[in-house]
Length: 275
Ligand code: ACO
Ligand code: V55
Image (cartoon, rainbow, N blue to C red; front, side, top):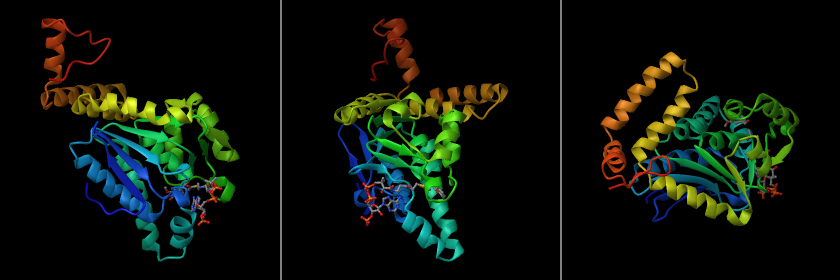
């Protein structure tokens, strides 16, 4: 795969899993303007590569990501002309939520360690999240003198109950992967020794399914949250017809045939055999 990166890394495995790494372990994978720019390009590459059927976002070393880079994203940008900040913010938002939230392939955040502040945005924008039970999370903004910015509080509103969001935003206290799972910030928390194995298992399952249908399914769930029942009814039927009409593998016909004609499938208990 092309791409000359210095702060991110892509590794595509034969099962169709595209591993996307925050790759600044010596800076605990803090998100600098360079990293944000490279993530946009990396997501472009993963989107275009037909060998990639599921993306896992994880971190090199001890960190998932220690949030925004306090030196390169804050201090150096504060000292630069105003257009530099406009661009740094735009490129940060571009991948952290805009590209990720409706990414056309399934996405899983594999939280292997430190996850602070700005890192909550890409965490929440991945479809699924699996954490090391000993990973450490925190909304540390108040600890260094700012309220959460970017889309961090919006991401919290999407996942956490208000009491939990306010507790952690206001106290700046940390919590672990187990607590993250109890609050439903992540789907599961697993021991360190099981993290990669469990994530690979979930990613392989999704990679083996009908990408076209999964895309419509995930985007549907995310978009209808902001819609009335009336609008959602129109939207979901329009997308259902578009998804089944344009499905290159005609999954619905295969599924119905395997259940009704061949009687080889019980869709309640597992997916149809992709022909
Ligand atoms: N921005 C810039 N540099 C960072 C960041 C960051 N967010 N996090 C870590 N680093 C750098 C350190 O400056 C240090 O660099 P150096 O080796 O060149 O001096 C290196 O990463 C290692 O950091 P340590 O603090 O020595 O690592 P340690 O493992 O002891 O602690 C921890 C890790 C807890 C993540 C700590 O580095 C930390 O608190 N980082 C900041 C976390 C944070 O508050 N992020 C901002 C959230 S708010 C927002 O994102 C808007
Ligand atoms: C934060 C994140 C930002 C930002 C300001 O709270 C603050 C973190 C992702 O961008 O521009």
